[in-house]
Length: 287
Image (cartoon, rainbow, N blue to C red):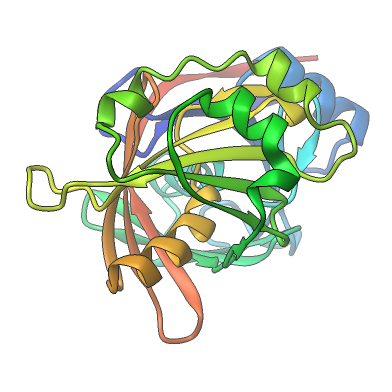
């Protein structure tokens, strides 16, 4: 069996920045065991598998596909950067003729539209709920140490804990943050959540004008730090839109690789997440 594979860096226009994802367009579904093994072999934060829903469609003419995402250890319900990468493969490499593609996923139907040099993804909005920090004190301590925390929220839809640093913190507090992700994982073994997002207010008056910054730590799903996390911005976009009173925002995920996301909250209760993707590798998996 030969399976085409592409590796793309998402939410960037530069190689070795953004978040890498592997994408495999498949003529037929594989066993779950094989999905897990390929994802572990690729060893990226996510590997995406695209399959046709209608057997008479091709990857060039079809507009609706099934999409699944796997980390090296588990399948996930929602993933932004690997969705972006999947659309880029179909549009750029396979020359899909449609202006918009629809992916059927565990997280619902996701639409991706070509936009100039990038892509706009139509994602669900996942508002977080404010919680008592004392309920998560060990996790907060492992994530941010003694940095001052403004508030803590939890998104029940995505099982992500959101920690907002105090506005008195400089951006270096977040970029220089060193998290022992093994210790972080050990603070929560009940399955209550799958990721910790650390965020802080941006400086929209200073170029390039980021409205907020964030980092993501997801050791519970085999990803110690995710470089740029599209799905987090379904939570962050909801939170910061309310705090800043803005529908359109520019976000920066300030991991060592870094990435940029354009966000727009829609009137239908969803969020547009826009970004670019660049291909790094194209090859064949031989089994």
